[in-house]
Length: 309
Image (cartoon, rainbow, N blue to C red; front, side, top):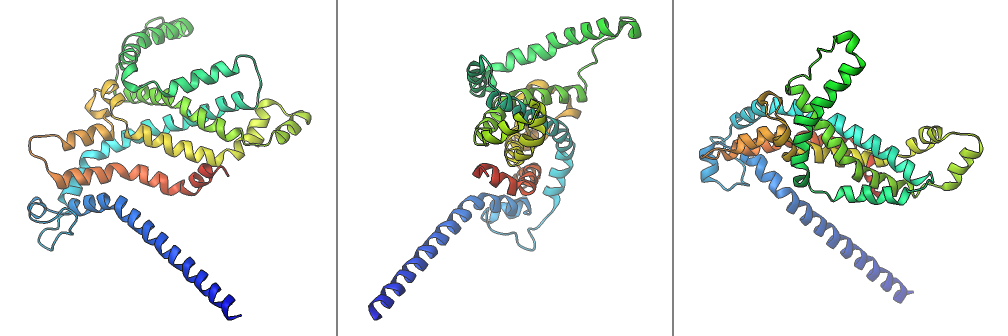
């Protein structure tokens, strides 16, 4: 009994030591990844002189604390934050919904040429942004205005008298074009994510619904869509982060100062000959708040979607 009891105690101690080592490793990893964030927060509340005489990660003293950098960053980025949300939210929802519908048609419905379409969609994921900048700008600046004008004059000529003109590329039009661009570019990756998720859904359940006379749309609405909520959280978080943080498409499609998005205003905030590090860090924190809130709101569903639950 004493030998068995001694073995049990040794195993228990070994298990506790393993957990302590695991927790220590996790804490070290958390500290490593949060260290830049802590440095940014500390720098944000420092005056320029306090930043120059203290370590970046050290908290500001009583004489070095200020909110001027945060106020400047907020006033500069606030219009861009609103524009980014007006652009990113519709693009995210559109790409996730269209990706779900496309994946449903490529997974649970059999039709000729299905494999070829899947290959084309996967290929669309690997097309770099830089490769489409020229045709994208040509489309929105030259091709689309002519198509829109011809369409409106043809269908609604009896109302407009054929005098309708494509509106100038004002702020709202530019944000709409940027939103549509991101939605179209995000459909392939959303389709691939949803397709891998739908392949794990029981085929017997879908077949039973078909035997009961349910249509393809009814199956999607009543069965597939409710089961897709975790994957919707994954795609919404991923796509919103990609769209919100993009700068390249915004620089190409938006040239009105009033319609600039957050990344454009953040880039302007960090420019200049003399760098104001406290203002730059404050701008980075303010610009990151929307994506952080999205992760907090959809975090539980995101974990379920990644786990395939």
